Length: 456
Image (tube, rainbow, N blue to C red; front, side, top):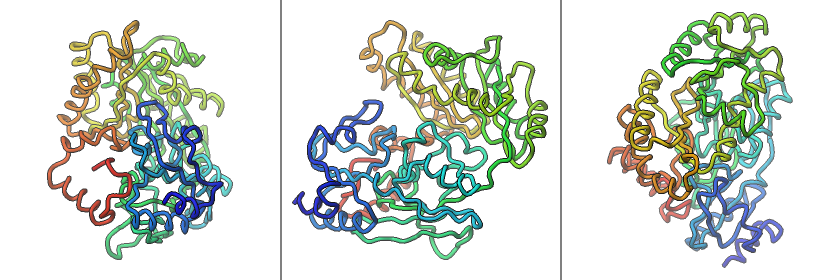
C-alpha cells in the first residue's frame, strides 16, 4: 500500500529509512519522539489531494508537519509507527504579492522569514514576528494561530489571514483564497481551520494581510520593581503612543541574568532591577517624533536604542530567553494568558505558591505583556537531578493551570493543544464547547485520519 503513496510524490520525495526520517520525528525540545511508516513531501495541492484521497480509501492516518517548531507535539507522529507524516516543505512558493491591495498569497511551506522578506521586497510589512521565524512555516503559523511579539498592534495570525486553500480529509480541495477585507456571504469557513492543528484539513496556501512598512521604530529597555509597575507603564504607553505602540514584553531579572551568563549579552541598565520591560514604538512618524513620545513614557531607569543595531541588540535580550534557559537544565514550560488587568496579581500569586511548595525552583515568567500572554517557565533548582525535577511536572502544572482558570485565562495562549495539553482541554472547556469541537471533527474528518489523538 505504501508504494501507492510513494507514486503520488515520486520516490525522490518520499522517505522510508528510519535514520533519514529522524529529523521529522523529534520535537525540538525532545519531549516527543515519534515513528512513521513514511514521510511524504508533496510539491503541489494536487498531490496533497491525491494523498488524502488514498488515505481516505485505505483509512491511513496522516500527520502534517511544517517547520517542526511546534511546542505541544501536534506535528509529531505517535510511537506506534503506522502514521504517514506529510511535510509541507516543498509547498514553498510565494504565489503573489499585491502591494496595492496589501495582500500576499503564499503556500504553506513558506517560512515566516521568507514571507516577511517577500513583503519587504514590495515595501510592505507582514507583521507576524516569532523567534523561530527562520524555520517555522506559514502553514504551521496558521494551524496553531501563532501570536508572537507584535500582537498588541497587529493581532494574532487569525487576524492576518484573509483566505485559505485547504485539502479536506476526503481529498476535496476548498479554494477559499480571497483578497477581500469584507465578506459576509455566509459562514467564515476559514476560521474553522485556523488553530485546528492539522485535525480538520491540510492548509496548503493562504492569502495574508500586509501593512505599510514603518518609517521608523524606537526600542527601549526599562527597569522596574514589580509587575504592577509594568502594567502601569503599559497603560501610560497606550495613552501616549496609541497605535504607535507595537510591542511590550516582560522579562524577569533571572531572564536577563542568564542572557548575560550564557549568551554573551550585556545589561544596558547599570542598576539591577527585579523586572524589565522591552517596549517598541513604530509607525509612519519620524524617529525623532517617536523618540520624543518614548521619552514621555519612560521612567529614568531606561535605556533607549540610538540605532537599528542597538534596537536589535535590545530585542535579542528577549528573543534568546528560551535558548538561554536550556543552559540552566530542565524546564517546565507554560503558555498561558489572563486578562491584562489581572496579570500582575496572577504573577504574584503564582510566584508565592511556587515559593511555598517548591522553594528552590527558578521561575522565568516572560512574554507578551501587551496581550496578557506569559510564557511562565520554571527552571530546575541548581544542583538538582533533571529527572527528579521533571517528576514534579504535574504538581507544578496544577498550580499554574489552576490559577489560570481562577483568573479566567487560557492554558494555551498561542502554542495550541496538540498532544501535550489534550487531557487538560476538558478541564477548561465546557461540555457544550467540547461537543461542538468534536462535532466539527466528525463532520470534516469522519474517519479520523487527520492527526488523530491530537486536540480532541
